[in-house]
Length: 218
Image (cartoon, rainbow, N blue to C red; front, side, top):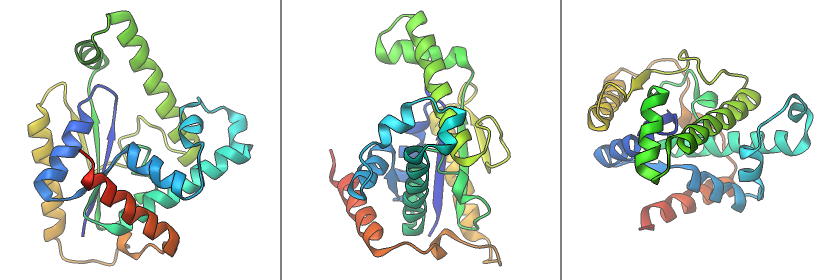
């Protein structure tokens, strides 16, 4: 079993790439909808509000923020333990470092390219597109840096960093698939795996149901 995490900038075509990788490999996809549904079922109903609020220094001591980060960490590890899955966004690469059965990929593109894509996709003008890109970059970076103590612009945690300003989504998805297949061909070593995570039974059931819902959704 293998786990792929896709960290993506808005407008980088990361979602399309992740879904293409999952189709090619026959893996489940766990995007923000799957994670948020699992978190709600597991008892956290305010995840979206907390995630989208730009964190401040004081959030490090805020009970709701700490609880949110902890529960997100548990859900990401439960998804990874399930295996044969592409986990998209929400800083999922951060708690899955150093695992032999995980491939972490970063999808990015120059800001002007991302702005143009947002303009075309949403039918908005350049000023609004630039504002949306800047806000999404700020919010996502803020949460990940506060929750996991990692910089969102640090390439170190990733096995692959792909710039879709210079290559097509199809080519990018092919690179990730090759990386996964190469990982599967490696002889088992002493490194820990996501399959060894301990996950409580309730959360395991929630994750299984969330992935069934993902498969059956149109």
